[in-house]
View 1 (cartoon, rainbow, N blue to C red):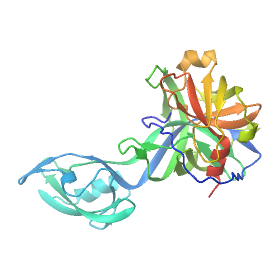
View 2 (cartoon, rainbow, N blue to C red; view 1 turned 120 degrees about the horizontal axis):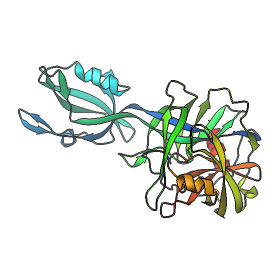
View 3 (tube, rainbow, N blue to C red; view 1 turned 180 degrees about the vertical axis):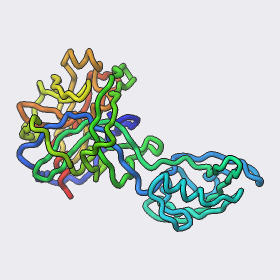
View 4 (cartoon, one colour; view 1 turned 90 degrees about the vertical axis):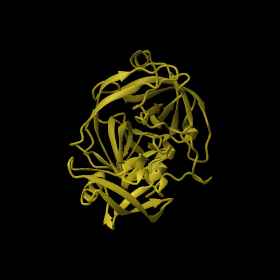
Length: 334
């Protein structure tokens, strides 16, 4: 799963016929990737009280809410935490009254913020906890050579502070190298630990959706990459299949699973495929589905049929997957 982000089973979209425009064959993923997505502005993830000569001041008591996204300070545009720090640093009176332009419920509004500056320590207090991006590790599912698009993760990137899908406007994916594994336990998620090559971007994230992240893939595909056809729901059946993922370094390996149940769907949902891991090597290494494995492609009868989305925490040997058909529809709708 995506690190620190818990997938929630959501069903969106309308009951419409599936029309998928994609190459007949896709490049198979399985690569571990680092994912970094940015907000448009800076999100307030919490507040704290500061001491003033008038008593305690907490921004949440003065019109500011967790989840507000700051886009300007005194009409100066804010795009990152660094922008916000530099803007607030310009106001070095012991007490500063500033106007923030924030976005709340998709609407820009102005609110006031009090900050304090300590000239001796040369720092300020704002009463705000903020963030401008989310990072984590997941798995690439496919690359579509016709549209030069990729799909990954199989579920949304959640904002763990706000408990909702992250309202991010762009992002980047990078190569990741798995360094160790924390095994899954009953009701305790396991996890891939990886280093991310931030100096080597390979793709641009343009969509964060309930069934994965999507965007453009900017690198030349490895000559050894597998190219496979993909299957519609009607072609998929219960029984043996394979997942492709990385458990050590950057080596993609296949592991056997058993598809135990299929949910026929007319709308996008990541709860389409139920499976159990049967591969003893994988169970020994990870004891089941773990965080960072989301997006690992599922292959049956030589065709890509879907991707892992999440684990059943009461039994980490079991999990769910999303149909590849839904992912392709989402990836290529722009």
